[in-house]
Length: 368
Image (tube, rainbow, N blue to C red; front, side, top):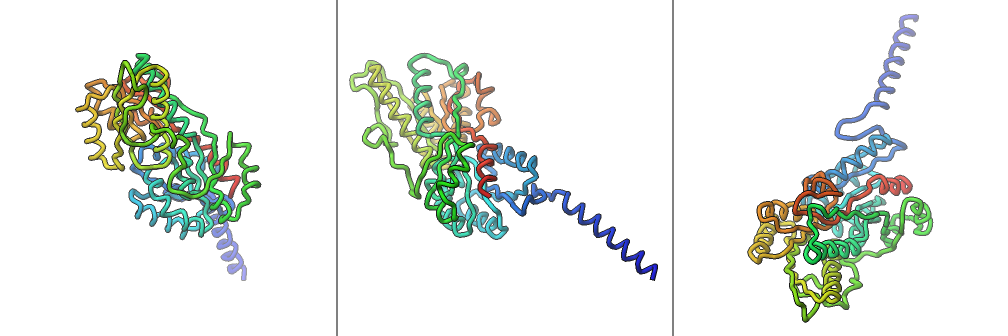
């Protein structure tokens, strides 16, 4: 009898030790011990330079808070859709995506299944919310485009050097909520907005559509096609080559507002800008050809919209020194586009849509 009691006590002790270690140890692959049963899905394209640094920041934050997470990746719309299916099957409580062009392209294909599964998709740009994500958090891309135009003007007209012209950053505290998805998820917009208010500079409403209604539509310069903008009797014309990475609502806003602002500046100062615009649709070969065409045309300045285009332009202009202004590059320092935000140090500068990862996770935690 005593032997049975000793064995029982020993078994219970072993089970207790196993239980303690199981509850405290972290799983491999970034899955930490769950907090209140919540798991955050991280959805991104691992080949996107703009995504990897934001995802690393997200993982560090979640590790610090002891919150479980799981990574889901895809490089095509089909792969992203399959990744979302996996996340739904795993029962994640929410999904985070940074300013990732691949996921943005797939958003219209995945938003309905996420809404039906009751999973809010938190993203790094308002264009995601436009295309069906629950929430987009980040910079005002229309303003980013106007500020990019100011930098183009400073370099071409005022003689500023990209090497000494600081990269322009912005406060990115605007949360854009898709009210249709908000309702499908069972959230009350007024109540959720009140929760978010301490963490946001502004909260905007949006409904699902393929593209933004362009407030500059009445201005002919707002179209994405190549055109001469500015003064019709200009004493000087500058040639600017703009390459967009993908047909994305936020990136298109940037291009539109670059053209509108250059048109305004040109009319005010009796100069013109010959815009050569093209979109590579995320094709590296097409991108290279577009940049080569700009070089053949001897453009005075190149504009790369999104990180991959900016990096390709930097590489192509190392010897010629043609000025390059980038737009919507999330982390220009880690991608070595510039030496620092304050002093780029090369023929490249521009505007950044850096995402404050901690702030968007404040919204996620308030929600779930």
